[in-house]
Image 1 (cartoon, helix red, strand yellow):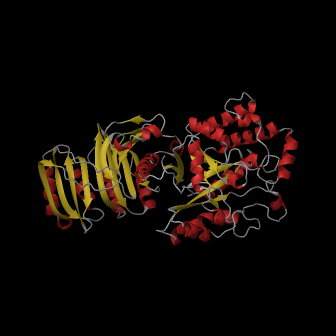
Image 2 (cartoon, rainbow, N blue to C red):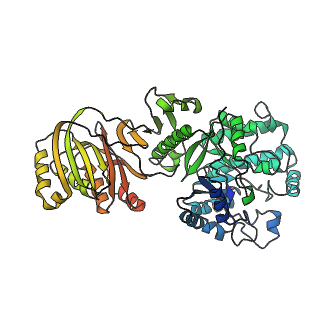
Image 3 (spheres, rainbow, N blue to C red):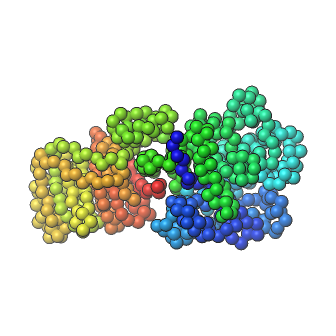
Length: 564
């Protein structure tokens, strides 16, 4: 039996305090919680905050104060700034994630209110959508008195639960595009019993059982995750949701997030391992966390090699998702696994094998990414091209491409390596010798400015490709086109017209803003060129440049890695 992890990457984590609000939701200073996580040697900690609620949606304790908009705008607006301050203070010591729990308050003013508040969640790692209040203004997770009052208003236990599920379905239909996770989907069990139809919903023909099946199918169709929340266990009613719901979610391939949903530092990290035992009982071998709205796959097992493989998988998912718009990022990708990754075929339903090919291929919406942590082997094939030894600074490679383009010479593939001593080497394979290659070399060598940058520039025929590979995670292929780029913190991926001068547009743009190219790989498929560049520079500047490359660029994306 494999050992389970003692740590979980939470989503519904510890609730942030609400500063000057009289009614607080999470009472501890955030630094105190972070210090405890560091003391426990945890690699990450996750904070969560509720969006503000309308006046009509208040708990008894809140109604007894003068606070109108509970969890008010001040604390909510300051939340990202507080997290940014924590990340700076604890840089290098712990990874700090944060999310927002968006309150559902109906499809009219409540929906507009929530849409106005989602902008303050900009930059959050994820958003949970949760139903806490009935349209009647009474909470499902408040006092027993309030629950009994709502039960009396609705007339029966089945009607009570039916209303809750209807509201959850309405929430997903109205702002499913604003959330990644559906929170605690059987919350009402905190204060009222669960009807028999729910306890046995898998086989029951009762309308309420069918409502739950419909809800889970909607979650699956919207590519959302569900919250496996230990707060119910703290409160004596069991984990949210019950096992039968979780088993059906697993059958529908709905990802699960795990969290303790705690509101006090003394409860921090309680039931971490128990939450993994709980999802394992329902058939899950992994769960998801989020970074910048992109799902990260996490193994439930304390297995170093498996964790490394999940890191490779998550890098590939990030690469693919950042090539897509927000709507398509939500779609769960298809996977193929080969070599040492073949064990994933048994973990991910409907995935396919790739035999001895030691890589992971991730695909959706007509795009694919193939990644590995195996050091690529250089192809032992003779090639014709330029070998360059030059100064390692922005604009040098751009000037070489500029000279080649001026002679009508197209670069077929490229390899670049920094020597980390102020110099770099490169090899550019040339599509065909049009008789102008020597002219290009002579131009570079004959220009004083260029001569200072290029220490050696030589054209070779039937040469062997240099091996610049080192340990790391590699982008092997983009849409099946070989690139073999070692991934760094920031990567640019492009898909463009394969013609002389086209890549020069990108290189000149980067050079204009002193963006240095650390590594470069080129590939092509028919008339389409592909490039992968590891770069260093200001992300906002780079993104702005990529929007100005012109119609010959079919795709140009800056990829930043957040997963661990």
